[in-house]
Each structure stands twice: as structure tokens, then as C-alpha cells.
Image (cartoon, rainbow, N blue to C red; front, side, top):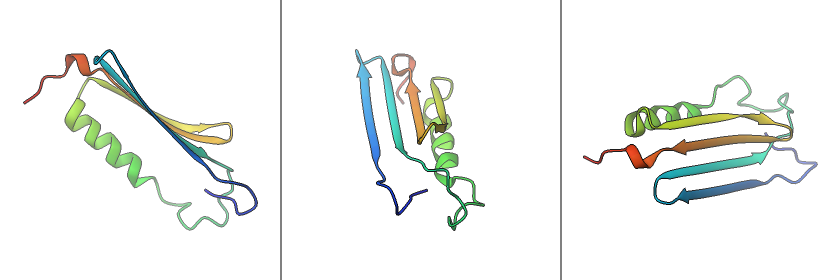
Length: 87
């Protein structure tokens, strides 16, 4: 969640390695305060949607990690695009 007493931020990075793999990382500020968060009892529907689409399009060729690291919420996707067959 955001905190009105401190600056919120987001960092997005996308790397392609020799056309064979993709690394996508999103990190945003995380202050751990949930008492005023109206969504505190909901699981992240965005996380569910990301997992579902990765499984549909990249079954067996991706790694998806997400969670809190210090004062950041980080989501990372690694895709082994070298072994993906196009339709």
C-alpha cells in the first residue's frame, strides 16, 4: 500500500538476453501498513491473472516470483523464450 507520509515509487525493468530469455521485474514501494487499506483482505487478482496467462502462453518455460523484500514489493518473471514453439 501507499503511505501519505512518504513518497511512493515504482521501478520497471525489461531485459532480453540474446533473444533467448526474457527477464521482467517490477518493484514498488511497500510500507507494510494495511490497517487503512480497503483491499487488505483481498488476494491480488493481478497475481492470479499473471500466473494464469503465463501458464497458458509459456507452460513449462517460465519462473514467476513475487513478494515483499525489505521495503519493496517485487514481481519477477523469467521466460526461456529459446524453447518456445510458435503456433
